[in-house]
Length: 148
Image (tube, rainbow, N blue to C red; front, side, top):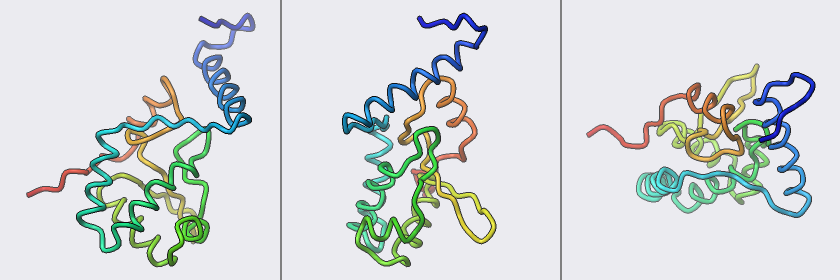
C-alpha cells in the first residue's frame, strides 16, 4: 500500500497513481476502460432491437468509450466529431443519443446552448475506487429494462 509522507489522504495518493498508470499505458498505445459486460450487452441488445438505425447506433455506442475523459465519464466529443467517427449524419447522432438517454446509458448536462454527454459509470468507466463509487451513486438511474 502506498502512503504519502506529506499527510495526503490515501484517496489522493491512489488517484495520483491511477492517473500515472493511465498516462504510461496511453504512451504504450493502451487505453483501459472497465466495462460491465452484462449491462453493455443489454445496451447493444436494446439498440439492435429498438433503434431505427441499429447498426449506426451500435457503432456510436462503441465509439463513445474512445472519447471518455481520463478523469470523468464525460464524452469529449461534440455531435459533429461523433458523426465523423461513426460516418453518419448529425441528426443520427442526436436521435441515437436520445435513445441512449432514454434507457439511462448516457445522460447529458446542458451548458448554455450546448450539451455535454456522459456515459453512465455503471456501464463503463476509467474511474476506480471511491471516485468510481461516487460517480455511480450520483449518476441518474439506469433504465435498461423497459416497463411492460
